[in-house]
Length: 96
Image (cartoon, rainbow, N blue to C red; front, top):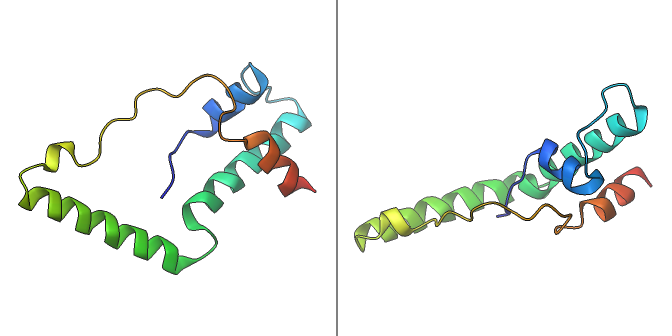
């Protein structure tokens, strides 16, 4: 499983500004961010997603049995406005 941040947030964290819809470079970066995000969820393997979903459901059921279901998945809050996940590096690898 992986933490999630939307494409717009990643873009802002990487460039310090919103995407320019007229810029081809910004469009390419957005495509790379989208692909990297999808890859992080799927890990390119359907069985990984199915397994993670099963584990999450099992965890929630176990927490409910313990009376802790409301605290099972704590809120992570806001992420810093910085490229803390290395999206710049990942996008460079995807383009290369």
